[in-house]
Amino acid sequence: MRVGILGSGLMGGKLGTLFARAGHDVVFSYARRKDKLTGLARRAGHNARVGTPREAAQKADVILLAVHWSRIDDVLSQAGDLAGKVIVSCSLPMNADDTELVVAHTFSGAEELAKRVPGARIVAAFNTVPSEVLFAVFAARKKTDPAQPSLLRRRPRRQTHGRWAHP
Ligand SMILES: NC(=O)c1ccc[n+]([C@@H]2O[C@H](COP(=O)([O-])OP(=O)(O)OC[C@H]3O[C@@H](n4cnc5c(N)ncnc54)[C@H](OP(=O)(O)O)[C@@H]3O)[C@@H](O)[C@H]2O)c1
Image 1 (cartoon, rainbow, N blue to C red):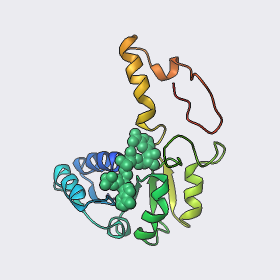
Image 2 (image 1 turned 45 degrees about the vertical axis):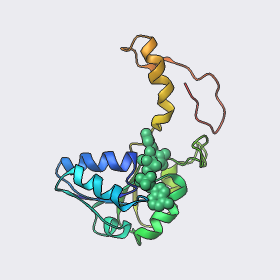
Image 3 (image 1 turned 180 degrees about the horizontal axis):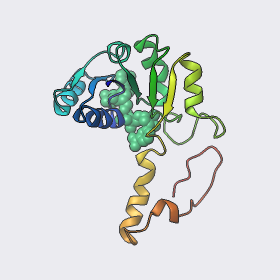
Image 4 (image 1 turned 90 degrees about the horizontal axis):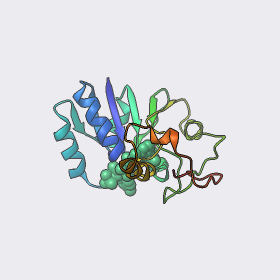
């Protein structure tokens, strides 16, 4: 497939690299520096290249949306009309410092995204939890039995509505 990457940071960079090495045609776009995109494409291999968000999106069979929630409107406006496109979104609806969800728990980021991109088919994926939330879990695991699934075993210290519950 032709995969357009909108947002080539941790998620877009890694997933785009996996897709390219698996044989898909990948276009990396949307980073603050062009050389970041160029380096990513070079390391991802001959199936990867660099483009603008519009170039990444318009010819794509599937688009990977991997920007911070605060950048969604910007990258979508650069990508152009995405009606009919399949958009796989790993963008979590978080505030600027990633401490709170800006969309309530009863209403998902995918639903909000669907309103902003009329006619697109939205798939939410790769977006259960930001890796930063897991840092404390990884640290705790080193001190306990590493064979245990920590996320299932440990309870949040404090449950605050609308906030990530840090284990
Ligand atoms: N990281 C995780 O473990 C994880 C897990 C699940 C879901 N998510 C969600 O996935 C989304 C992406 O996360 P991420 O960790 O991949 O974020 P990230 O590493 O910050 O990547 C975001 C991308 O957007 C680019 N960008 C930001 N501001 C820009 C601007 N003004 N102009 C052009 N490009 C700009 C960044 O450019 P630069 O490369 O130049 O910084 C980067 O390539 C977020 O919504 C996050 O909540 C992340």
